[in-house]
Length: 369
Image (cartoon, rainbow, N blue to C red):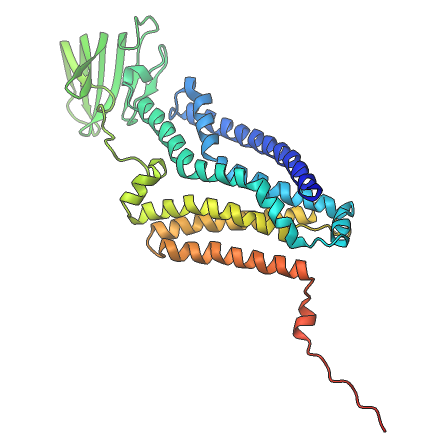
């Protein structure tokens, strides 16, 4: 049918262009953010691109919803400006008749939003969290750059090793300055190596000396050793199963209905419901006013999207803190947005005016006989 095919063809072009632009913007922002984390030592510099890719995949529900929303508003606004809507209205089509072709075009995108929100979002977060934890569990020797002073993971020790080191598990000319039990301890050794004893890694130093000095003025103790062991890095598998809420699968959230899990589940399901409401909202708010300009209604639509998205995030925090139930919040937010979108669409479809609704019809005046 010409009506359906023409709308879907233009929507596909507009959606594709908007999606490419938004993904480029988000990737640039995530690249800057990931480089900052790598500079702080939270992310492995060699895994910057991989972490950025997982982060962008996690934000795909929001990107797809915004792309669909902008594509519908932009396409229908263009049709208003070029008087194409007038032609369709004159042929017997109303504004509500645009809903079937819009949803026929949008249902694969809505399906992708559901998949990314319920499956892709926790999977991407778990992958990112796993890489960050693995990088944080590396030994203190692996953190140190040869020839530079570096802090350990807990920032309680300062390491220095010689540039001529055989590998990442051994080092030559080791210098360690730490604070333990209100004492400043300075240890130097000719060499050191990493050994695993049980679930803990130790730095075994050879042929060195150790200086202990209290933080307040007191007695200084100097000792020499042939072999000395110091704990290096975090324990293996120290994190256990304490995964963050956003990294847990949807089935795990359903099996453990705690307050934080309900809040995360309400956010994931809310992204799917919000994407459906965005189609109706875009159909209702799309118009063209020559006095406002081409970008007037688009700015209004973006403000509506930002407000809806912020309310969704705010509701997640409220449900997570136990202030509201997940069902009540979702019914109030998404149900209210659905009813508001339908009322706005009905107003535009039937050309309702507030003055005509409020005003009462007057009785006809009597003519004198």
